[in-house]
Each structure stands twice: as C-alpha cells, then as structure tokens.
Length: 619
Ligand SMILES: Cc1cc2nc3c(=O)[nH]c(=O)nc-3n(C[C@H](O)[C@H](O)[C@H](O)COP(=O)(O)OP(=O)(O)OC[C@H]3O[C@@H](n4cnc5c(N)ncnc54)[C@H](O)[C@@H]3O)c2cc1C
Picture 1 (tube, rainbow, N blue to C red):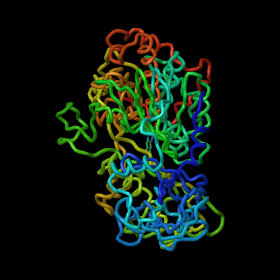
Picture 2: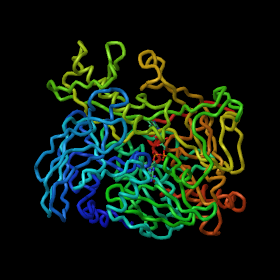
Picture 3: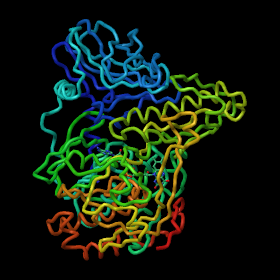
Picture 4: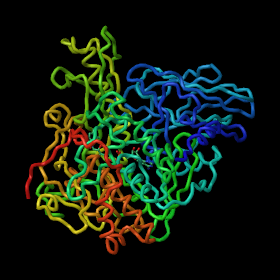
C-alpha cells in the first residue's frame, strides 16, 4: 500500500505563508497539537477543519507551532472561533482559551462570544521578523475551538466572513495551488473508509481493480472505529450468497459493545487489511469536497487534507460514495431524499401520513471511570438545567443518547454534535455537584466522551430501485437480489420520558423494531439512477427512510460494499457503467457473489454475528 501521509506531514510547516504585513495560520496545521484534536466534521458548512480542546472538563495541553514573520511590526491578531454554547445560553461560552505569541499571552479570552463562526480580536502585539512561536492555551477543557489566526498590521483589514470569499482568501494566503495536485487515475475511487468503504475497496482490489480509498480521518472504520465506538450488527454469510461478509472476519473486531474502551474496536486490523492490498492506495485525512463532471459522469473528486489544506484530484472510471452523507452524489447532482416519506408515496405501513424532515439522530457516546477516590467536575451550566427528575442517573451513555432528530443532519450538524456534548456535561455536572445521593458518582470521572458524533441518517441517494418496507415485509425477491439484510427494521424516535422534561430538545431515543426475514437487497439500490458512474454503499444507498432501518447496520453495509467492489471489477472488465452490469452482466455478478472475496478457512465462530437481531418474520 502506498501512503501519502508522510509527504503531507512534511507540508505541515507551510501552514502559514507570508504576504506583506499579514499572515494567516490555520490552527489545524499546528505542528504540535498538545491535547487539542483536529475536527473536520463540519468543514463543508463552516469552511475548514479546526482545533478543539476536547478535555472533558480538564484543560488540555497547549498546542503550538512556529511560523516566520518577514516584517517586524505591531500586529492585530484575529482568531476565527465562536461561543459554541450560544444556542442555549446568552452568557460567556464554555470553550474558553487564550493565545500567546512568543510566550506573551494576549489578554482577551477567546471562544466567549458570537453565535456563529467569526473573527474575534485577540489583541495587538509587537512581533519581530523571524521565527515566532504561537500557542493556544485552553482554559476550560470544554471544547474551545480555533479555526485560524490572522495577523495584520492594518487594523481595518479583517478577513472575509462569507464562506466563498473566505475560501478564496485562505487559498491565496496559504499558497494552495489553483489546480489541485493530480493524485492519479484509478479504476475505482472509494470515498469514505467506514465498514462499507473498506469492504468495497478490498473487494474490488482483490478482483484486480486499481483503487483509491479517500478517507477524512486518521483512523479507518467510521462508526466502528475507536473514535465513535459502535459495534457491528447484522449477520454475515446469509443465504443466498453465503460467502458475502466473510471478508469482515479479517478486519471486524471480535468483541461487541458500544462505548467500550478504545481497544475493543481494533482499529489496527482495519489499517492492516488496507495496507495488505497492493491495489489500494489509501489517502487518509483527505476530505472530499468537490467534483468535476463530464456530462452526467463524475470525472474527478477533489479532496482537501484536513491538516495542510493541500488539495488532490482523484480521477476514476467509477466512484463509490461511502461517505454516509451521500456527499459525492450530492456534489454531482445525484437524485436523493432526506427525511421521512409519506405513507402514500411508497404505500408503507410504518411511514407517517405526511412526509416530514424527521431523521434518526446522532450520538455522542461516553463513559465514566472509577478513580477510587473523590474527583471533582466543574459546574457546567449553559442553559440546560437538570434536577432529580430530569437527570439521567447513569455512568455511561451509548446509543440511546441521540440528538438532532428534528434538525438537518447535514447543515445543522455542528449544533447537533454540540448539543450531544452539552447534555453529557450538563447531566454529569448535576450528578457530581448537585445530586444528593451521589455515592455512585463521587469517585468517578468522565473517561471518554466522543467528539466525532455517530450519525445514523441523512441523505439517501436514489438508484434504479428504491428499497421499501413492502419489499422487505412481503418478501418481494428481485432477480438482482444481492447481499442479505438481516437486522430488524429498527427506527428511532424521541424518548417520551425525555420529551416530558425536554420537549423539542430531546437527547434520548427509543427504538421500534419490526422483524424481517433475511432479505437480498437488489443490486439496483447500489448505484445512482442519474449519475452514470456512481456506486454507493453504506447508509446512503437507495432505500426509503423505513427500509433504512434494516440496511444501516454495519455488517450489512459491509456486505453491500463487497457487492459494489465486485460490480466495479466488471465495470473495469467491460468498460461499462454500474447500470450496464445489471443489464448485461448480472449472471457474472452473481457468480462473483457466490465465490466471495474473503480469505477461506477463517474461523466461522458465532461471535461474528453477536449483537445481531435476526427478525423472526416468516414470509
Ligand atoms: C450510536 C449508534 C449506534 C448504532 N448501533 C449500531 C449497531 O449496534 N450495529 C450496527 O451495525 N450499526 C449501528 N449503527 C448504525 C451504523 O453505525 C451506521 O449506519 C453505519 O456506520 C453507516 O455506515 P457508513 O459506512 O455509511 O458510514 P460511517 O460508518 O459513518 O463511515 C463513513 C466514513 O466516511 C468518512 N467520510 C465522510 N465524508 C467524507 C468525505 N467527504 N471525504 C472523505 N471521507 C468522508 C467519515 O469520516 C466516516 O469515517 C449505530 C449508529 C450509531 C450512531
């Protein structure tokens, strides 16, 4: 496997590039991150990855870097940040931090103000030409965030705030070339390295396809990574294609459980399987944000490194959107749906009378650990109050902690994630500081709180077939039935007990299950109906909201990813499109599905199916 990471690390020092008496420094390009994390989740909405002080209430270690100023002078220092608790509280924000230049602290406390991302003036400082150290000092441990720092000798010259101008400004000041670097030409470009993306990439590679895997985190696995900590659900090796899914035995974690310690998720196995495939080039830390089209075909996907901002173009014959959010399809103009369909649209019993925007929510999972002695937690009150009745008396929170069902899971996602953090901290603060019977909590500290929020639903790209509830419950089998979905139709709703105390702002969910018989998902759900060379695998395939309830679990997304990889190999063999494989080569695809791509002879222990719910519905 070739990797670009080393080259990119070398480019980090170019985070700041000089022009006259101004300098722009991207926080995510800081050489030493200290305890700050790089958060790229909202870059399409707010413009950039940023550094965040995710200390769970304990101030994190300073982040610092060195940049060269060519001119001495008195500089005005602007920091792009905002008060992330502002949607819930008018007071000063929870995520406070300061900036120091060459060890001299600027007095303004940052992250305190603004309801949206803005340039906050940190102060003025005299800087000598030459190497200069910039440090970020976290004051609270509560998710202060810094996107960029702009130094200017001209106090009147603020960087732009609207996203289009700001993007141009960044590119110019950071010296990002107008034309992205060519990453190469591939048979298949897979975007998104969750279980679906890994499976699609490996399956194709083993069938002789040259693959680029573009993934916007340092760690592979998506929701099953140690960054999100969701365990695998669903069954592998189900009829009629009993070899599908065996691939997952090579990289799937052996243990189950949500919100467990990091090692449960075995990130290293996912890295190893990709590393072991000579036909895959992994581009980790690259976020795809644009496409170049050739008619209704994608010609190139453009991705940006989440630390250096450097851009790369990936040319491919076919592409697979495994981003979860259907981002590549959206950028390409693919037909998609989001929210719930009305009952009449597909004649689904479980659908609501009227279509609406409700989706399943996102989860910030967390747990606490026993410190064996009393440990304090700061009072965290930013507009959300808990009492004996409304508080959750728990030491961890997993899938039921779910936010944002009523919000837009793409455009409001930062707020949705932040509400996830708000409720964890506010509830914990109540248990630690106000709850009278707090014996269970007084020796405990927050041990892990996710900052990558696990998403369940957003865009669903539309294919030549849209899988519906009726397909599943009437067991309507199509000639292109492929990998089987085995989980129940598992849909989430706000928890009525939580609604009592937080109407419209629920953060707990309930699941309603409808059993199904294992059902072979039509291949036509796995490619776009209007973008000719676009496959999709993962939760963004062609299904209704109701049908998403079953196909969204990761053993199933992996199986369907494998099918995409097989179909991509046929696209290469015949120089044809995903639809042509259905029309002209379905029998050959079936042969590939019968054989599978997983290594033979691996332990077929039941544990690979642990945590799955097999419906008892019989057609
Ligand atoms: C709390 C919770 C509990 C759940 N419980 C279960 C369960 O018990 N069992 C189960 O199997 N499933 C469960 N699910 C559902 C399951 O996790 C998701 O449906 C599944 O992860 C979707 O897979 P995916 O590959 O489409 O997306 P993801 O797992 O999200 O992977 C997509 C990856 O693509 C990357 N990416 C996104 N956009 C870009 C871009 N533009 N450029 C480059 N990379 C990009 C992302 O960083 C991410 O890592 C749960 C989900 C949640 C949130």
